[in-house]
Image 1 (spheres, rainbow, N blue to C red):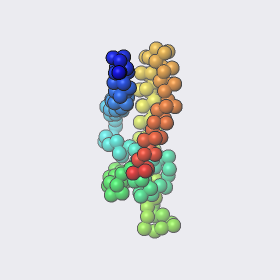
Image 2: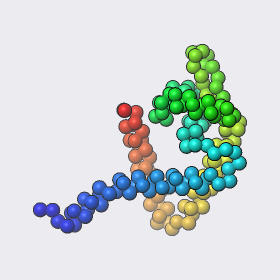
Image 3: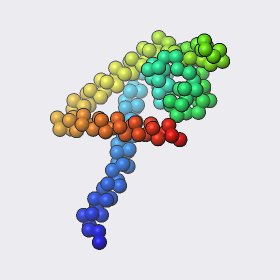
Image 4: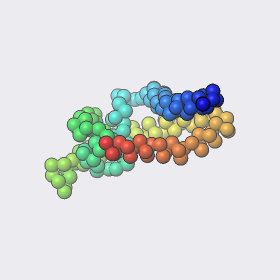
Length: 161
């Protein structure tokens, strides 16, 4: 026979993943909203920023590979590439190994935009983390390895599907 304390512990354990997901989504939404303020150029959508950050980390990546990495359909990435190229953020170069394929590179405008975004994000987080007490800052620092592993398992599961 299960005790009341056991039922509460089970309910709390089952609620934890939902609470964690909700907190992470809320933080991400608030980051996006706060960083939109003060933008000098047109607002980039989340998928556009993700693609630019991927190209920044892997210059010359192809569209198909970018689609796999971002877990998006190839035609969706092609649409993003066309938009970002038209806006002056991406360059498409012909792949010398396969003349039918394109390799993606950032323009100087994209490099500047990403650097500004990263600086502003670091400042935003720096201000708010500094407002936390030492115990909360240490709890967040201690949670980083587990959050990275969580991101890795989510990524690995997406690779399997």
